[in-house]
Length: 165
Image (cartoon, rainbow, N blue to C red; front, top):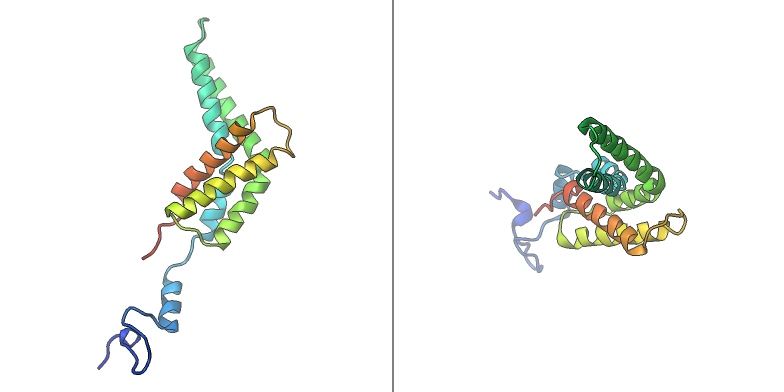
């Protein structure tokens, strides 16, 4: 009685016990469903990250370097408004290429490994750099590439599923 027929070698072939049959591969593929929606949503929202980080940095520099006596609530509400405005602006300006990249990533079913994270970081940085030629911003190209690459890297580390072994 063979409990695992797909793991037993066939006579006359070069099949080894670790080889899986087509049925076993299909059964394993059905068990692990790729999170398509999660990947698309998170990578589409990736352009929000640089705006949030930049506005928090500017707010911290403004609070700590301020010589005036301003109320703490003014700084908090101003920072909150700056964060929301920069997040919306980032999504408006870079939402379209982020959506296209996120669909490509989900179609290729990328996972959380070094190679895929590096690919997403490079693709995010280069896409932001290319898209910046269509959207006129007064920023250095290195800053645009770095913000696209870092936001894509952080999103890839968080949103991509772990590799199933």
